Image 1 (cartoon, helix red, strand yellow):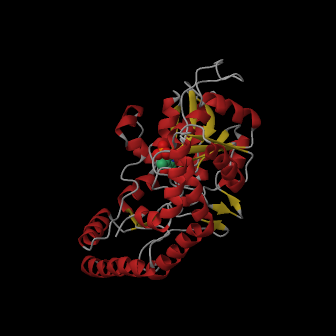
Image 2: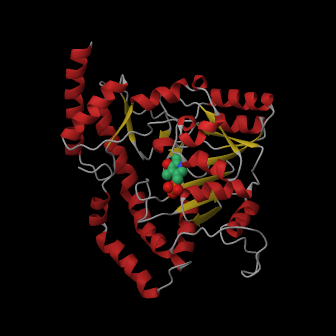
Image 3: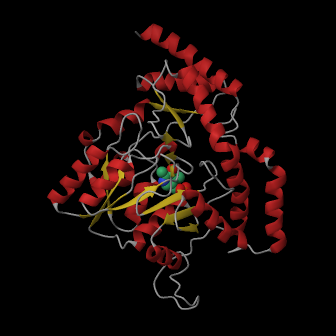
Length: 382
Ligand SMILES: *Cc1c(COP(=O)(O)O)cnc(C)c1O
């Protein structure tokens, strides 16, 4: 069994994918081929925003937006303490300081209450200027924008939605990549919509921001390609990846998003009474980048992971460390006491296999082993 089975997806779409790749080889338009522009149009329309700007990866996407917003030294950007490293890394790349915010123990997303506390603390301390919030749609569930947006307005902060794990998720029908002032996603192969290498995209309704981003991502080009009006970088998706993404986007829209939600339903049915399973609040649809459960203790999780490994069931731990515990941020000397939830989660969460091609038999097999283990372990340890 695979944790995220990209082989099954390839087998199912082999003819279409091979043709898409072959067509690019025939055309030899490896950079800026026609499928790149068409992909941007399709992604913007799917997300329901005006502009989509593709780039080399999700981390660049975050960096480019912060750069375009002129965020830099002496600025503070609020990010969840429980996320993938890139969310905070991009803030540091522009020279600003990430201010870590604790998360909700059930949705795993940035806690609006703690966010307001950290904004107030930062203002009071006066060392950095608060500029932006980067909420993350962690594991495929949208952050709570109905509470984040009013805070952003109140404290005049920009909102950058990190939907690297959230593509396809929605709230009341409004899709990921359309929240905040700008949003980003990643096409890393294991993300909900993945390509066969690296890729990323930025989304916004802001015309000025969009044209600035298009310049920054292409060596700071002006209206004339050979007049460079600012220092930018080279960050683009290549035509091959865009061609692959067209096939994958069709599959994602036609059945993958609903299939992965069916897998979630099976999991809930078999595991809901045994362990803490994902909380998907009313009117939210997750795209299930991950399926997370919570165990009672570090030891229980460790033993379950080993038990499943023996049965050839792969599991992952996202995340073993909070942001403030990362060695790269040790110099910030941040104490643990602000982050009880994030810290507790690092020792309790475990991710089980999930993807649109996981069968009901597989889910039954996984969950029956989980149940067997939990019953015997808790029987001995209660
Ligand atoms: C994967 C990921 C990124 C970075 O995306 P890349 O394309 O790998 O650079 C950023 N934020 C989050 C939350 C991610 O999961």
